[in-house]
Amino acid sequence: MRAHARRHGWALTEIDAGEFSDPRYLRNPLNRCYFCKSTLYDRIAGLTDRSIASGANPDDLGDVRPGLLAAGERQVICKLPTRWKRR
Image (cartoon, rainbow, N blue to C red; front, side):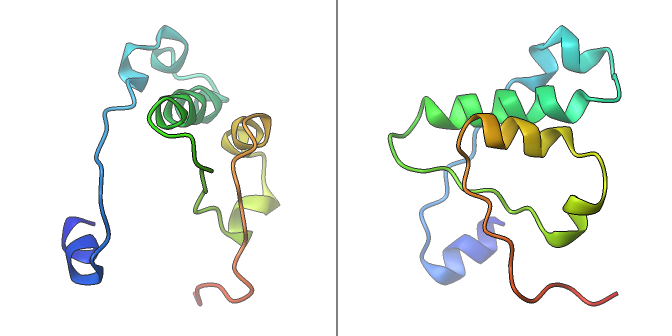
């Protein structure tokens, strides 16, 4: 990611979202992704007043995805690509 950001001239900020400090996440429940993404989006929101975007893809919609619930609760932008990866 660092090389990609450098190559394209993007400002890259790496953060520790702190999910390993969350006992709900550490219990490793089926909805652990909800806790991980909640922590991540909350941390990012604390660093900016701009919109937050997710890299979700169409494959994420075919199953139970607690992380998408966390994104929706926080108004995270999730613009699915019109074309996606080939298998």
